[in-house]
Image (tube, rainbow, N blue to C red; front, top):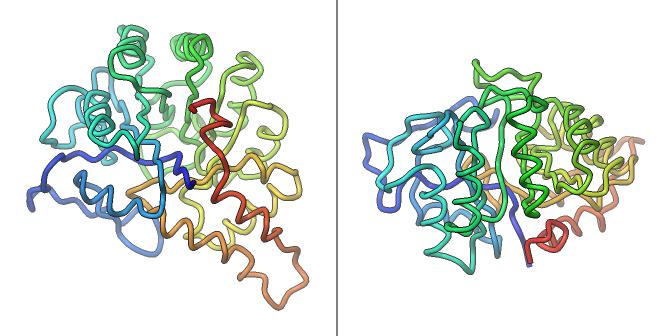
Length: 295
């Protein structure tokens, strides 16, 4: 079974109106990304993943849409960012697992956590400290981690750089996750994108903490950085803690799947070390749901 642990909730249940289409050229160097999409477009793009974890982003306290373009994306679904995810998951429960997104500066964040957990059936949390502009070690964020740890909710953090101009990169540095994991040793943490470009920092944090993992989303379209990330994971002996992930719509599950067999292509004809092929293929079928205690 292939589990994609990192995808974003569609803004539209039905067809996207042509005037609402957005093409984003900044996310990856090889092509622009259609960043407003429908349920059907998402589901078609997620082949060959059997199960996908899906979430929005609470860009601001009280965020209504949670789309990938920032606050204020249009939508044809009612409710806030988490209601939209829950509606999508409930329509396709065999294919989707929903995570909530919370904003630590929302005075009702902990109430929203309980509503999402108990009423909406969302099973983890997505946070992006750089996008949401909060320090990962501030008290309001720590309160979310504490409640997540108490209730066995994994937390997926955006890690690493971003082209969003107003998103402070320092809030997404992987070494901050070391501090979070030391304070909350039973909290399951997923470090997205292997913390690119700080993949060595991510590898040593993952190695240090039993409940910290990293996903491989958004890496393959920078081939040397992708190889570098994987060879660092190999040298630090954490390839077994890397999780398959696409970051749809930025990439698709199929693109990510296909790219895993090409990691070593960039060093063909050189004396540079190879990433073990069997370890790369194991990422595809890793039992991420068991590792994240989502079975």
